[in-house]
Length: 114
Image (cartoon, rainbow, N blue to C red; front, side, top):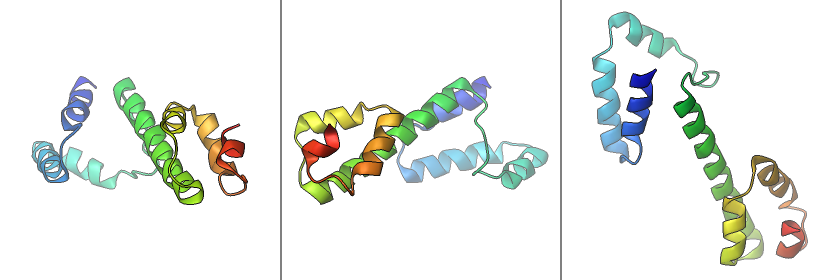
């Protein structure tokens, strides 16, 4: 578990090319059985094993949701005030879901955010 957490931590912030290189080096160091198991995994249903990976993945999902929501709101209502951006970036999953549900039907930005 510590190796997996260290692997994820080490790849944070890497550019795509370096990340691919890093993954390739790790994959090459695996036994044949481990490589086959890795290839056979269904990424869509995989559940992270370490607390670190679960937390990192959840944070990444929330950040991605907030980014997408900010883009949609910008397209719908124009540039957002910094306070609105901060509020959305700090929103809970439940709040992000509510905002996503309401972004297409809210008449104004104020309606959406209240």
